[in-house]
Length: 209
Picture (cartoon, rainbow, N blue to C red):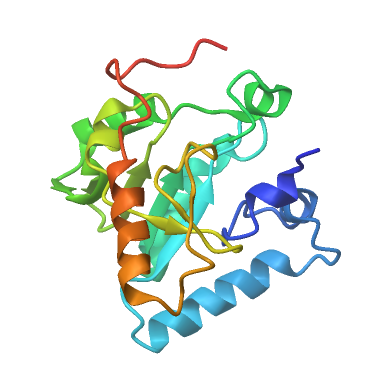
């Protein structure tokens, strides 16, 4: 079974509430938020720019904290990345239906308010520069044809497979047996690239759940 902690294995700050933070991440103490913010500040002090605060938005848990996250990013001088929930177990799973929070309405709202909009080549993602200097980037892969069409990533799994698509687990290419054979490894890379195709193919439409 899939739990909230699995969503945040690679995420940095799921909530600004210590209670919610521990609930989502399974962190046992009440200093989780404090430690993460301290780490973000240290990264900024070390000039590891741009420093990004990643937040997967979960309906009913942290969606009401979005304004506070934006304010925190502005105060720290970090880029806030708000990320839609993705569930490889399927869009009809109980987990996805319970926690999925569509970010398209927020993206449209920010677009009207931003003083500057930067469109990134990867995924055609938009970064919004607000009047107070806050920088907010929306990562909206779900039901988003535009995101798929501008994806240029090829991921590597822990067991030595190329993963051509973020949303699929049925088209991986195993390269673990050819690591010492450059020509064969090149063929595997090409095979994985050929398998790349947009997961969402019929335009941008929101999930009805």
